[in-house]
Length: 273
Image (cartoon, rainbow, N blue to C red; front, side, top):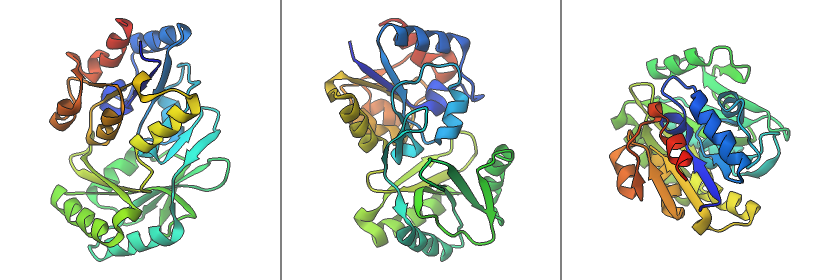
């Protein structure tokens, strides 16, 4: 039996309406009480993740913001891999040549209080996302985006072709100083490009969690659905894709489940162990 199971949230453990079913909650807490180590690896922040995971036992460090931060549910930082202000500023200035402005999620202080910076002039995809976050107290609208001291992720949203061009430009200019992830947005009809610290992805964050728990990769199982989960799949002894995962993820998986995220795929698998 694997000692640690880590699951992605969106389109993997979360249902498409961004809820967790009573069955999934029941199985998670039941397995936790039986000694399973259960955690998440998500592109979402600590604040949003805790909102979604309310009612679940969360004693294992959480992998957040694509891996830029590993923290406990009570806001104790295990590791933070953030882009500093200088390189973040260069990244933003580079994107302005393409007339693209980003979102930036960063830390305001050492207490892990987050800030979500967004440009006042939004494209249609950004506007749709901001509408979903309109009551979030982390939001700060800016005439001109100025990075923070610690920038956990810089995110662009747009048509796939434009995002590919920008990604290639950033890779050329910043080489090994950044990590980029390009994926189709699971809820909005566009692609998003995430720029991270080179050690700010889920794979590196998993290493931090394994070291913290003093367990090996042979004791690790992971669940996922999208491109930013592939690094975890390559690291884990057991990689599990949900039925609705993208084809590239299914090809990397040891197991492809017969159920989707809306059919409690993760919980059904755990319930049979």
